[in-house]
Image (tube, rainbow, N blue to C red; front, side, top):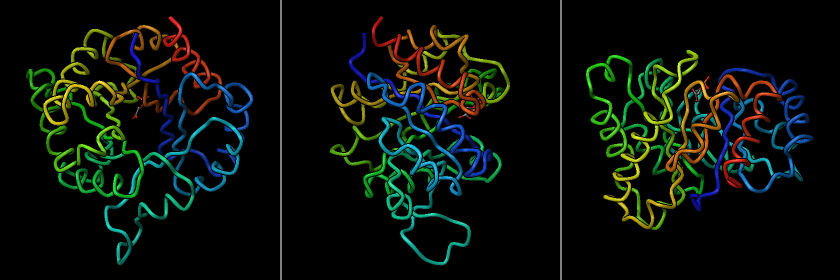
Length: 258
Ligand code: PGA
């Protein structure tokens, strides 16, 4: 059994008003709000951060954002800085999600600047990596993941490396209902941990969380979370309803006590 405390993070994407978000949080708090054997982080849209932050007060649930800009302030219309997130008691931030990369043209260098800026502000970055279907079919999965990890984490100080969280999200599995098999995911997770060990040393690498994302649901979570290097999930669709998200948190609890 791994000594890493699992993390279940809900990526709400562009879903839920602040009012709807608070409704969901009330149900989550009632069911798993005091669960302490795993960590749970909710990543609502920016507009719901404040309300969700207030609704989770007094619970064990944490607050994350879905993106940030690397600059501290200035003429960047539509963007949000790390200090703005910190001011709302945000602790985690998703960086380099495949939708940011494919729809908004964000590259590894931009993800890297955001990772460095988030760490400098004591936010925990959840750096997303993962291959396209065409890349998997061309046997390029490891090459793509290596590039995203090496470029995305360039210049990360060793002293801050334990705050990193990596999410392996095969792009072909996101929102499609197709999941990587536990063995397929484990293979990439182990490879990522090897890359982390090369950069930060094996002891630090053994403490960094590597989440799986891509159609993780209550019916496949137990098998995925049983794998040695899968330390939790970054959950999209199944995080939007209390029942499925609570079931996923319970799967993670079971994986700790197994
Ligand atoms: P999904 O999304 O669970 O809906 O596949 C995961 C993600 O994009 O983070």
